[in-house]
Amino acid sequence: MMSGSIKTTRVLAFASGKGGVGKTLLSLNTAVALARQHHSVVLFDGDMGLANVHVLLGTQPRATVADVLAGRCDLAQTMFVGPEGIKIIPGGSGIRDLADLPSGEFARLLQGLQDVQPPPDYLIIDTGAGIGSHVTTLVQLADIVVVVVRDEPASLADAYGLIKVAHTEFQCQSFHIVVNDVKDAQRGQQVFTRLQDVAMRFLGLPLTLSGVVPHDDSITDAMRRRESVVTAFPESRAAAAIRRLAGELSNAALATDAKRFLLDKLGRGRGVAMP
Ligand SMILES: Nc1ncnc2c1ncn2[C@@H]1O[C@H](COP(=O)(O)OP(=O)(O)OP(=O)(O)O)[C@@H](O)[C@H]1O
Ligand SMILES: [Mg+2]
Figure 1 (tube, protein in one colour):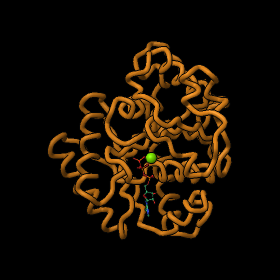
Figure 2 (cartoon, protein in one colour):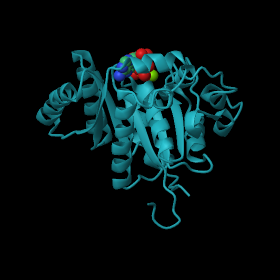
Figure 3 (cartoon, rainbow, N blue to C red):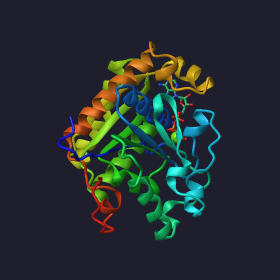
């Protein structure tokens, strides 16, 4: 599928504006679903406030991004192997906003992401809530921006706020919407249409509906078992929806030209493409 010998990592960032709508759950499970489809995947917990990918899996990591930022180790040393062989870079809880980090520390973090060996097919980034600079920075790095919404006015308003900032301030053109935790696909479509109407009206921006994930108790059951729902309950409605979502996102990712990687995208001028 990849052309020639050039290997290009596609970067997918999950964001939402509002907290607690399912970003961590969906980024973990999308990562696992992609790995099941024989892709190599690194999952980066980019939630600098309340890291929780490893909590979801009941793992106590040896080191986290906090140790990387403190210069105690490099990113590769924090990585642990999760379900289906995905590699997870655990976030550190309670880290200051990335905006407050000296640029050297920030660059070291991004450099570490860029230097992950071997380069994976997909780098999936779970971001935190809000639209602070740490979130918008990670969104800027992404080839595919996935916006998770729930069927509630605050979630739609915050998703729109995130899209508006990313579009008007950072020139993001393409947003992949996932409606999570709804009764059925029809309801998901209605929620998407509401968001899309607002984005069209105020930004003239069409959105893409990439998936609808139903409310499903298998998700909470899998969480209780500290597993992904895709591996714990592969027959569940949620797992089926997440597999479809992963397929949609990987098709979309392959259809876009991968941006040049990380530091370059932020205009730090290194001009380094993935090997
Ligand atoms: N489709 C679903 N069906 C049932 N429960 C769900 C579903 N999606 C999410 N949940 C529940 O919502 C909770 C929040 O999910 P998650 O932690 O992934 O949100 P988040 O957006 O990452 O939150 P934060 O902004 O705090 O990082 C989970 O504990 C899970 O129980
Ligand atoms: Mg989260």
